[in-house]
Image (tube, rainbow, N blue to C red):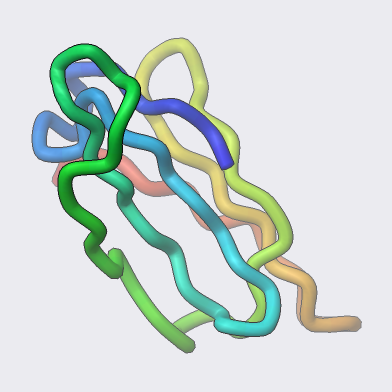
Length: 81
């Protein structure tokens, strides 16, 4: 899980981004303005890349997602299109 608060992907601003192994899903957990409660949960994608090991937000707003599928592991880079 990592905190996203960049303009790179504006709809994710002030959110937690959560990667799951078993569920194979990347979630956006939108926080309220005081960042102490989750207002909304969205699936960004599910079962597109297999098991998701970790997520990391770079200083420039790109999001890196590491998969965990044995010999087919990948790093996926997400950014505004």
